[in-house]
Length: 103
Image (cartoon, rainbow, N blue to C red; front, side, top):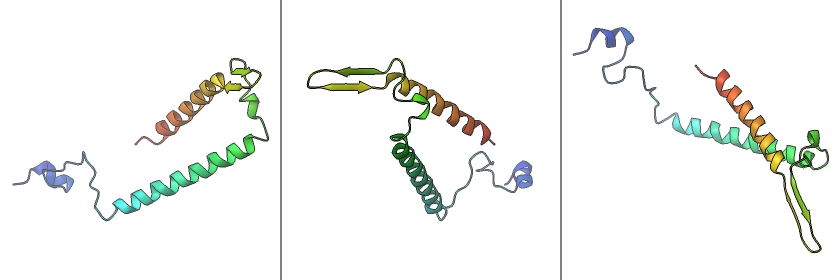
């Protein structure tokens, strides 16, 4: 027997609309979209890295607090503050993207 609520929603009693139904035929489509999106993101990141070596964006990579050591035979560089700034900016961008795409 079906409940009146399930009949009104057009679903059976097992799936009350809380879990979206995904057919097995659409799974490759979703994976394909994800791979294309990941590829575009990698291309954009690669392009920024290639261009970034020629131009210093806002002084990134040489901020105060970045660790640089040059010895006689060794040199070490770790952009600590640059990593923190980039992490904060990317977190803000991803949070904003997540906030705007909520349903």
